[in-house]
Image (cartoon, rainbow, N blue to C red; front, side, top):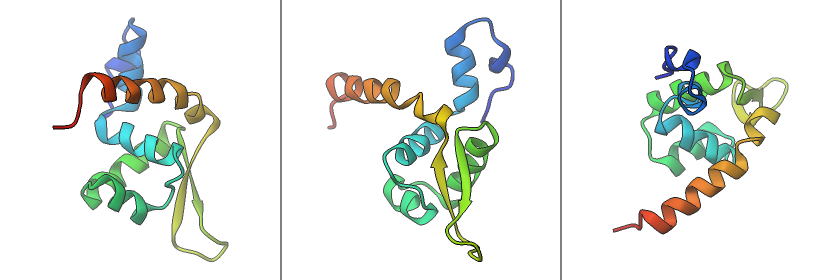
Length: 107
């Protein structure tokens, strides 16, 4: 859920959290930044429920982090492409992932 009350918070980290929303939004964005742009591919890669992914993609488009593009002019299927705004999150997310690898090892 996008926390609108956090989007106006005086703390920049809180505002960023309000914009990104939740973990599924972050993982969906990270997948797109790493080249997974089609719904079915994301669904399989992330292991998330279809309705959750659909909602998070819609929200990421709404906040300007992803752009929804038809696969071809007559297609009813879409891909979700990171915007320039999303690209600015690539390095911070890469660092956060590296921290997770160091500090939160898989069991």
